[in-house]
Image (cartoon, rainbow, N blue to C red):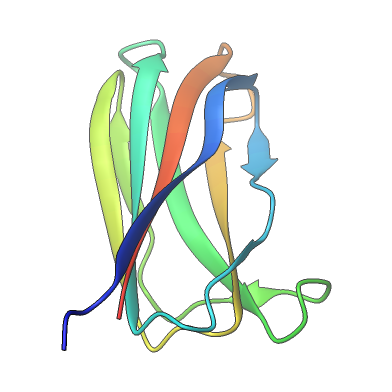
Length: 111
């Protein structure tokens, strides 16, 4: 049997300061996931941290057990996830005093 996979662009060219929570995404069928964040523009000294939140209903959220991942400046980073819940969302955090950060967020899912 062929396993399913899917990639969703959850946020495209979004600019934010401080904290961004992506729109929830239903992942009940998937066995594992990976978030990819393409940092299009950011000050080279700005640290961006990403973490995942999970939910049983898409309304109430708690942190996923995966450790946050961070990087400084533009580039690509990813956060692998196992033991998914029915709903996922990504939380991106930049230092409060940092300039705006522009990103694209992808969620890849696999059975």
